Length: 551
View 1 (cartoon, rainbow, N blue to C red):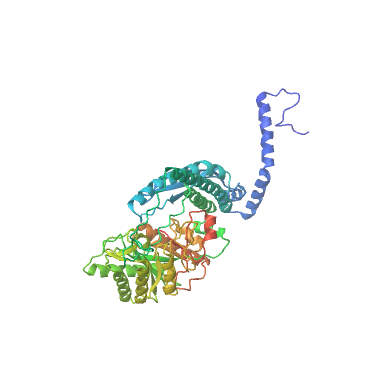
View 2 (view 1 turned 135 degrees about the vertical axis):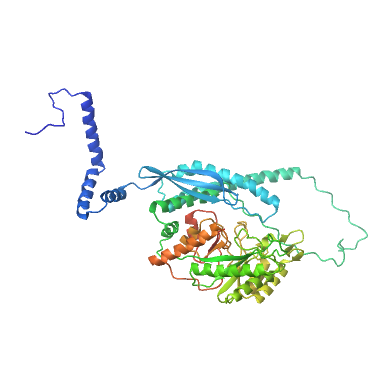
């Protein structure tokens, strides 16, 4: 006789509590059956019986973890913070739901200002930065959070497509707003203009064709004015901040380093650790000496060296430089923000002579074991009232004279392999002349990020691509760039970055995924330009010949 235990009999009065319990049991059975829970439990129990693992519950956890739903973005949050240098920055938070728990991934995104201009411009940039950050936070907390809700944080391409579409729409709105404002301003200016003056009365005493110009006076050659940068869309920094925060969240979810997560987006199996360019000396306008021209002297190591070898050699050169500077009449100055000793210079030859002497004492031949790059920062030295560069305090040079100076300097110091920002971007003729004179033996590097969209960079100049300032060195490794500039060897945060590069290189070598060196040339052929865009845009923009500047 079949048992009716657990089921209500038709001739017995069932209480409401028993009926509810019976219905709940049916719903539970239906719920578990629909989600195949009994089937999966039976499978894992059978597998575990034959596997006989030491950690039974760990085996169960790993089995069901594979069956869990993929992580989803539940929202974004952002806040205004200050970075290590006291500058305004945006911190983006990506909140993800992972196995029914909410996790948070953070990304600090710095709004880089340009203090190389005059104080009035810098003050206006500070006001502009506050507006950018306020708008960026509104984007992060509002529309971007709604757009990305429910997205897979490991699907970087899909997330970046949403971010790009959103930014394209905001960019178009900003262009239309600016165009409308310009038209209103133009109409207001036309209404405020006074009537044109009457034509001048011709002088009877002057002969035809005679002008009021003093005889023998030669008109100064006018320099091209500084081209205003392309206006940025307020809040645009939020796009890069969120994209990088999502990339970090995806790396955490996949339990891989960020650089490996980014490389997986490129569908490549080999890694290349970028060659570090180390700042040896800081001079230039911010130093106590008269020399304004050379902001940094940078070490370019010989191709094929490991990161640890480069750092060891740079430390030896640094110690020898400090010994020479402390033993001379002029003591070594303080350390610069770039992490290198400040040298008091009157002429550019002094800095180069000091580096050559230090290398000679160590048995290093400049031009063979090492090469040098000079960060000239000439765009900060133009005296627009006189149309000349103040390369040394009280000494002015025209753009053509500055080209002659570079030519003479490179003839005397053939170890110099790159000039960074040797001229203003607007001095196109001098760029072409400098490229034709020294371009074969020395790379010319220029910051093109501030150029107007209507004005292209100087044409046919190999190596003039711009420079990038970012805060994530892991991106440089993940993108497979050739060179990375982390500054000097002073400061715990910089040495931590160098140590991390060494650790990454050792890890890749042990795993057999360290790519073959491709840096067969001494010269730096291109210098990457950072557009503050998404990770996917950077994957499409940067290649193996580009480099990053990370301070």
